[in-house]
Amino acid sequence: MKNFNRKYQPILTLLARLVLGGVLLVAGGLKALKPSESASAVAAYKILPTQIAHLAGYALPWLEIAVGILLIIGLSARFAAVVGALVMVLFVIAIISVWARGLLIDCGCFGGGGAVDPAQAAQVHRTYLLEILRDLGLALIGLYLYFFPYGLVSIEKPLQIIEEQ
Amino acid sequence: MAKQAKATKASGGDNFTRWLVIGMVTLVVATGAIFSVVGQKNKANESFAALNGFKQGGAIAATVDPANGSGITLASTATKTIDLWEDPQCPICNNFEQANGAYIDELVRTNKAKVTYHVLSFLGNESISAANAEFCAADEGHYLDFHKAVYMVQPALENSGFWTSTNLLKIGKYVGLTSKSFTDCVNKASKLDQVKAAYDSMPKYNVKGTPTVFINGKLWERKNSSFLLDEFRTAVEAG
Image (cartoon, rainbow over all chains, first blue to last red; front, side, top):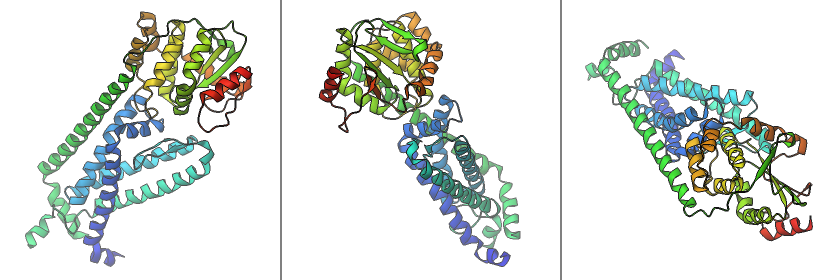
């Protein structure tokens, strides 16, 4: 395992950056195009007071876009990965909280969102689980990038590599 | 592993780059958020264009019976009764209003039916704000106009930040509600007790969704998928 990581780490890091950054960029972009939907989606979680939830709903997509771009181009990848992973952990907590309180909502992860018809309860619960697993996976990818932020095709390079060149 | 650790140690020393990146990210997030908020404000203002030239129907007395789920009753002397259960944010209630609102208005104003509006608020915090304002309007005798105007500007999305006190007071202005008592009532959310009482009375009347309509106490079930004035009028005249 250790050897495997040593051998493929640069490409693994690149893949991790593209996956986490790509998901964040797409999710943020879709939401930024429809800010009112994003604001109402955050409000639907009923965690924050409505006004603050709206503000978070307006700001969150841009944070996702910024961090996504940093990861993809490989600038401050470690910092961006930590922020990205924290955002994912936040999503997981939010979805668990919603699930525990018995609320039925569409997470609004990629735009849209809001309350869901109670008739679809079973399906919504299954979706919650998948979303939690997906976001946990993405958080783990972020964690990997915390330890190995430098890989292929990256603007920022570790000093040692620059010296080698 | 060793390589990475060394590398990060080296780059960790470069504080300037780190703060530059953090600064840029903050800047992007702040500008983006401001951009979105301003865009929404403009959109809200545009929706008020629907109220330009709003024809006020005039004041009409309303009574609110706290014992009866705080329903807002209009034309209380008429014998025929219509009970309407609505949420200010519910889009289907808006469809119902578009089809039958003018007819119900007429029934009330000609004293042909005793109409009771049960203002619900299960679609979130913004429904509560809007419902509170509707109770305030009822106190001032302007429920019918205010209710109509609320549906005319209703955004397609629930809880998207539209139903603020500022916007609710602005709706009030279009229907002639400018009194200090109305302004205070909206700003202080004075009617939350009634909003809650209306919501809590749902199980008592076996109401599970909106819009729900009872004609002479009997549940009205539409046969068409959309709301048709003829169908509703026939049901009211028969009921």
